[in-house]
Amino acid sequence: MNKLPFNGKKATEFAVAFIEKSNEITYLMLITLMYLADREALIQWGRPISGDEYFSLLKNVYSTIKWSKYWSEYIEKSAKYTVALSKPCLRDDLSEAEENLIDEVFTEYGHWNQWKLVEHLHNTLPEWKGSDKYSLPILTQDIILKAGGIPQNEVAQIKDELENLSLAKSLFGCD
Image (cartoon, rainbow, N blue to C red; front, top):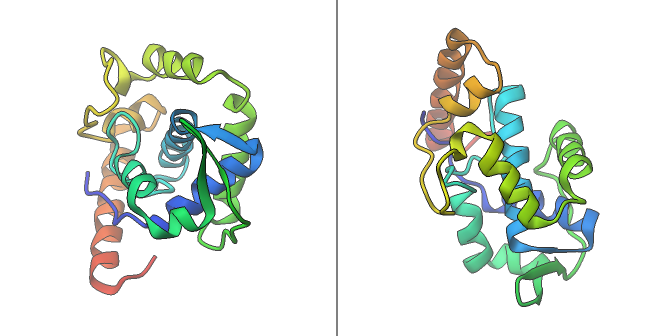
Protein backbone atom coordinates (compact mmCIF):
# COMPACT_ATOMS: atom_id res chain seq x y z
CA MET A 1 0.00 0.00 0.00
CA ASN A 2 1.43 3.35 -0.96
CA LYS A 3 2.30 5.47 2.02
CA LEU A 4 1.08 9.01 2.39
CA PRO A 5 3.60 11.80 2.85
CA PHE A 6 4.34 12.21 6.54
CA ASN A 7 3.32 15.54 8.09
CA GLY A 8 5.43 16.31 11.18
CA LYS A 9 3.24 19.27 12.17
CA LYS A 10 0.11 17.13 12.14
CA ALA A 11 1.91 14.34 14.01
CA THR A 12 2.91 16.86 16.68
CA GLU A 13 -0.70 18.06 16.98
CA PHE A 14 -1.78 14.41 17.13
CA ALA A 15 0.61 13.84 20.05
CA VAL A 16 -0.43 17.09 21.74
CA ALA A 17 -4.05 15.92 21.73
CA PHE A 18 -3.06 12.87 23.83
CA ILE A 19 -0.66 14.78 26.08
CA GLU A 20 -3.34 17.36 26.90
CA LYS A 21 -5.60 14.55 28.12
CA SER A 22 -2.95 13.07 30.42
CA ASN A 23 -0.81 16.11 31.32
CA GLU A 24 2.28 13.89 31.31
CA ILE A 25 2.78 10.62 29.44
CA THR A 26 5.57 8.18 28.64
CA TYR A 27 6.91 8.07 25.10
CA LEU A 28 5.87 4.42 24.81
CA MET A 29 2.32 5.10 25.94
CA LEU A 30 2.04 8.13 23.65
CA ILE A 31 3.27 6.36 20.53
CA THR A 32 1.14 3.31 21.32
CA LEU A 33 -2.02 5.42 21.71
CA MET A 34 -1.18 7.24 18.49
CA TYR A 35 -0.73 3.91 16.72
CA LEU A 36 -4.12 2.69 17.96
CA ALA A 37 -5.86 5.89 16.81
CA ASP A 38 -4.06 5.81 13.45
CA ARG A 39 -5.00 2.16 13.00
CA GLU A 40 -8.65 2.84 13.86
CA ALA A 41 -8.76 5.79 11.44
CA LEU A 42 -7.46 3.50 8.69
CA ILE A 43 -10.20 0.96 9.45
CA GLN A 44 -13.02 3.51 9.82
CA TRP A 45 -12.14 5.94 7.04
CA GLY A 46 -9.64 4.13 4.84
CA ARG A 47 -7.07 6.79 5.72
CA PRO A 48 -4.74 7.09 8.73
CA ILE A 49 -4.33 10.28 10.73
CA SER A 50 -0.55 10.51 10.57
CA GLY A 51 0.34 9.11 7.16
CA ASP A 52 3.21 7.41 8.97
CA GLU A 53 4.80 4.08 8.15
CA TYR A 54 3.78 1.25 10.44
CA PHE A 55 6.83 -0.21 12.16
CA SER A 56 5.19 -2.01 15.06
CA LEU A 57 4.42 1.57 16.07
CA LEU A 58 4.84 4.75 14.02
CA LYS A 59 8.28 5.13 12.43
CA ASN A 60 8.30 8.83 11.56
CA VAL A 61 6.62 9.91 14.80
CA TYR A 62 9.61 8.45 16.60
CA SER A 63 11.98 10.48 14.39
CA THR A 64 9.83 13.58 14.93
CA ILE A 65 10.19 13.15 18.69
CA LYS A 66 13.95 13.04 18.32
CA TRP A 67 14.59 15.72 15.71
CA SER A 68 11.63 18.01 14.95
CA LYS A 69 11.91 21.68 15.88
CA TYR A 70 8.10 21.99 15.72
CA TRP A 71 7.72 19.09 18.18
CA SER A 72 10.23 20.55 20.61
CA GLU A 73 8.46 23.91 20.45
CA TYR A 74 5.37 22.39 22.14
CA ILE A 75 6.44 19.12 23.75
CA GLU A 76 9.23 18.74 26.27
CA LYS A 77 10.85 15.88 28.06
CA SER A 78 9.59 16.05 31.64
CA ALA A 79 11.27 12.97 33.10
CA LYS A 80 13.51 10.25 31.74
CA TYR A 81 10.90 8.64 29.46
CA THR A 82 8.05 11.08 29.90
CA VAL A 83 6.81 14.09 27.94
CA ALA A 84 4.54 17.03 28.75
CA LEU A 85 3.41 20.18 26.97
CA SER A 86 5.73 23.15 27.20
CA LYS A 87 3.06 25.54 25.86
CA PRO A 88 -0.39 25.35 24.25
CA CYS A 89 -0.57 24.26 20.63
CA LEU A 90 -3.33 25.01 18.14
CA ARG A 91 -4.49 21.83 16.48
CA ASP A 92 -5.65 23.17 13.13
CA ASP A 93 -4.35 20.20 11.09
CA LEU A 94 -6.60 17.69 12.92
CA SER A 95 -10.21 17.37 11.79
CA GLU A 96 -13.10 17.22 14.23
CA ALA A 97 -13.55 13.53 13.39
CA GLU A 98 -9.86 12.88 14.14
CA GLU A 99 -10.15 14.75 17.45
CA ASN A 100 -13.22 12.64 18.33
CA LEU A 101 -11.37 9.43 17.48
CA ILE A 102 -8.43 10.50 19.65
CA ASP A 103 -10.91 11.08 22.50
CA GLU A 104 -12.38 7.60 21.99
CA VAL A 105 -8.98 5.89 21.98
CA PHE A 106 -7.87 7.81 25.07
CA THR A 107 -11.12 6.99 26.89
CA GLU A 108 -10.66 3.30 26.14
CA TYR A 109 -6.91 2.95 26.72
CA GLY A 110 -5.54 6.13 28.34
CA HIS A 111 -5.95 4.81 31.88
CA TRP A 112 -4.04 1.59 31.15
CA ASN A 113 -0.48 0.93 32.27
CA GLN A 114 1.87 1.18 29.27
CA TRP A 115 3.02 -2.43 29.65
CA LYS A 116 -0.55 -3.72 29.81
CA LEU A 117 -1.26 -1.77 26.62
CA VAL A 118 1.78 -3.21 24.83
CA GLU A 119 0.78 -6.71 25.98
CA HIS A 120 -2.72 -6.06 24.64
CA LEU A 121 -1.30 -5.11 21.23
CA HIS A 122 0.85 -8.23 21.05
CA ASN A 123 -1.98 -10.51 22.13
CA THR A 124 -4.89 -9.08 20.14
CA LEU A 125 -3.73 -7.30 16.98
CA PRO A 126 -2.86 -9.62 14.08
CA GLU A 127 -0.11 -7.36 12.74
CA TRP A 128 1.71 -7.71 16.07
CA LYS A 129 1.41 -11.48 16.44
CA GLY A 130 4.79 -13.07 17.03
CA SER A 131 6.54 -9.71 17.40
CA ASP A 132 8.52 -8.93 20.51
CA LYS A 133 10.42 -6.06 18.95
CA TYR A 134 9.29 -2.44 18.52
CA SER A 135 10.87 -1.71 15.17
CA LEU A 136 9.63 -4.49 12.92
CA PRO A 137 8.04 -3.19 9.71
CA ILE A 138 4.39 -3.92 9.06
CA LEU A 139 4.77 -4.35 5.35
CA THR A 140 1.12 -4.05 4.48
CA GLN A 141 -1.87 -2.29 5.94
CA ASP A 142 -4.03 -5.04 4.41
CA ILE A 143 -3.73 -7.03 7.65
CA ILE A 144 -5.10 -4.09 9.64
CA LEU A 145 -7.98 -3.50 7.23
CA LYS A 146 -8.92 -7.19 7.11
CA ALA A 147 -8.72 -7.42 10.91
CA GLY A 148 -11.08 -4.44 11.04
CA GLY A 149 -13.63 -6.42 9.02
CA ILE A 150 -13.13 -4.54 5.76
CA PRO A 151 -14.10 -6.77 2.77
CA GLN A 152 -11.32 -7.53 0.25
CA ASN A 153 -12.94 -5.47 -2.53
CA GLU A 154 -13.03 -2.42 -0.23
CA VAL A 155 -9.40 -3.04 0.79
CA ALA A 156 -8.48 -2.79 -2.90
CA GLN A 157 -10.48 0.47 -3.21
CA ILE A 158 -8.79 1.93 -0.14
CA LYS A 159 -5.38 1.02 -1.54
CA ASP A 160 -6.24 2.79 -4.82
CA GLU A 161 -7.55 5.87 -2.99
CA LEU A 162 -4.45 6.09 -0.78
CA GLU A 163 -2.20 5.69 -3.80
CA ASN A 164 -4.06 8.50 -5.62
CA LEU A 165 -3.99 10.70 -2.52
CA SER A 166 -0.27 10.08 -2.10
CA LEU A 167 0.33 11.00 -5.73
CA ALA A 168 -1.77 14.18 -5.42
CA LYS A 169 0.09 15.22 -2.27
CA SER A 170 3.48 14.63 -3.89
CA LEU A 171 2.52 16.55 -7.04
CA PHE A 172 0.46 19.38 -5.59
CA GLY A 173 1.21 19.40 -1.86
CA CYS A 174 -2.49 19.20 -1.04
CA ASP A 175 -4.46 17.31 1.61
